[in-house]
Image (cartoon, rainbow, N blue to C red; front, side, top):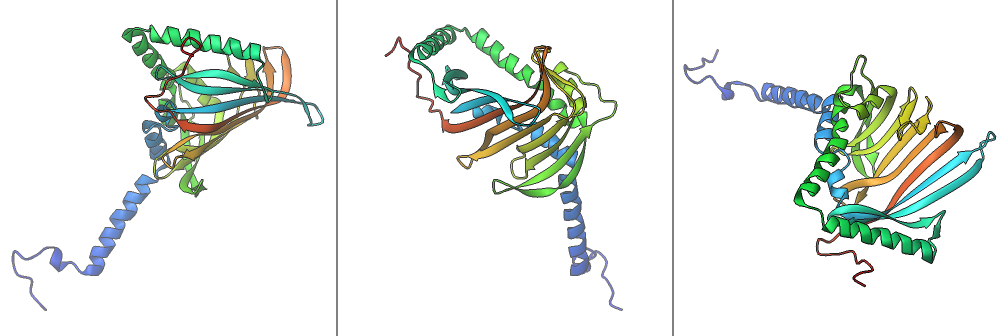
Amino acid sequence: MKRIRSGRIGRSCISPSIQALVAWTFLAASALHAQDPREIVRRSVERDWTDFASVQNYTYQERNEFREYAKDGKVSSARSETHEILILNQRPYERLIARDGRPLSAREEGKEQEKLDREATRRERESPAQRAKYERDLAEERQFIREIPDAFTFRLKGAEAVSGQPAWIIGAEPQPGYRAATSDAKMFSKLRATIWIEQATYHWVKVEAQALATLVFGFGLLRVAPGGTLDFEQTRVNDEIWLPSRILIRADARLALIKKVRAEFDIRYSGYRKFQSDSRILTDREN
């Protein structure tokens, strides 16, 4: 038997097959950790799951349609509004440009321009303290998002391509005994969801959620009954970021606490264009 000289025991004494086994075991353990569903969700929340900061650098259109259904399942009424989202003094501003698929009348357009002029003047006169307060309020509004990793139990259901990009599919069920730290996060205990998270950037590219109990929005003016669904989709823009493409809510709802309807809220986003930092929105005062 060949002796091993003192002081020479080391990597060279380990056979290549064992070295490969050790390396494979290490990589497999790393991959398993990387695919822990709660860790994936936690990282997605930390890395701005909807690219919220980036969307504020884009102008686009948002079309909101509300459809009511009769008992026979046919649409009984529908109405819509289309807004153009502009960047006004480094912040988004919504301007109504169409109603029920038709452009505004000259009179309505004039009123919208007046609103834009007033808002432009107000923002120009804001102090640094007022602008800082706006940023703080905006951050606080989104604080509840950070509770998502603790509000649910997660299960990795598989993977598939979304818009040509590999994405994990993760099931989310309410965490028993979870107590929300913020008021907005209380709704998490009333939802189950399936989430598609892009593997490269950890963005949420698709969500399918269902109400397990009554959801209340808008100071109680809108109530969505159990069984209502919410679908959220994003699209790849300029091959660099994910931005919203559609939100669809289907529900038996009660409007203004009085009218009970079977309805759909259909929100679609289109026409994304990067806003140039040297661009300005002209108001009537500057035309």
